[in-house]
Length: 112
Length: 112
Image (tube, rainbow over all chains, first blue to last red; front, side, top):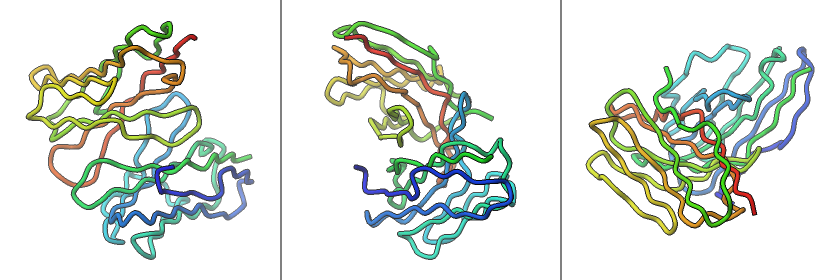
């Protein structure tokens, strides 16, 4: 266990649904990340938050909406997704100024 | 654009043999990391090598970095079936910040 938890672990949703992914860490880290991992593609960085402020938005479609209420929690709100958004969504955290990232187990998302 | 690219894409070896994976990148970096991912799970940090280091060891892992060739290698000695996983290199952008770019990974299969 890395100390980063993600819920739910599996999610199936229709294209008109609204759902949220949750990530939580109590490692005292200040930076949190969302990644998308699709089959046969490299891990794609989506968003980065540092001290609750968004520092990276890697041209992610607006149907993905991140929220970082504090340094320990990170959400990814999903609405009107497309089947091609089906993937493993990984959350990670890292201490400030340190490159090593600690990953959660991921949420396997299927969009029907 | 993809920063790190691993070679080979897949590798199958017998238990007890050594496994070597290579990573090439395009721009200058501050450091390079290697991560491991078991199927459908989160990534686990293995080792970080800084741009002013040439070689680093951690248990059965040996990482080399050649900044003149913009390449790194990960050697796993005396491999075990439990080493079966995907291995990714990851680089920073070299200008600070939190953007880590992952390669597509090498899938290692160790046969018992």
